[in-house]
Length: 175
Image 1 (cartoon, rainbow, N blue to C red):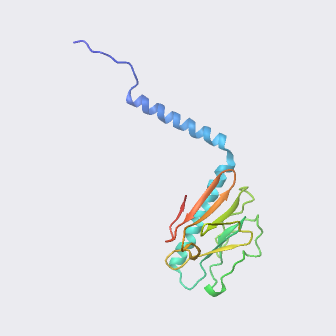
Image 2: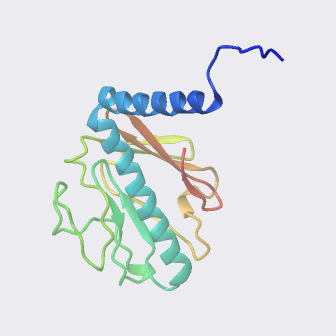
Image 3: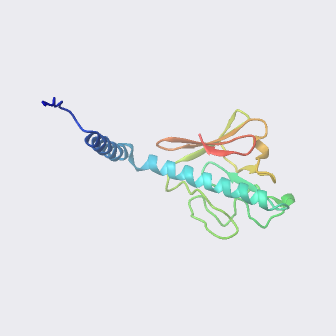
């Protein structure tokens, strides 16, 4: 009995080639996109974590200030000890815009000196360049008061532009 041999790649060889091409393309992409775009993505991830942490705290802690502040260069939750009627609209005066602040009272996020980026905010379809701190207030079921009518967007402008969306019902995600 004579067999007909066809020439070509086996399935394993084909999969191995696809995996190798994927690895090479990822390496080349990071080389050409540079470190700044990676930093902008890292900053977006930090902001997502901070917003979600503030949201979870708001859902578990009634009777306290659950405010998250953002300006062009910083973003963080207001002190955890404040009551709602004394919620601050200013960053701690001990913090400079390029300092990295970490303590138990304040969840600090973004010192943009190391990221070379700037924040902007879109609330009710209005683009805001927050030159002074802009407050986002979370309620007890995780919604943001300022985003009650339409979703809010936080834009991070750096080498690449990243966006975070806050939906009207409180869902926070990258968009």
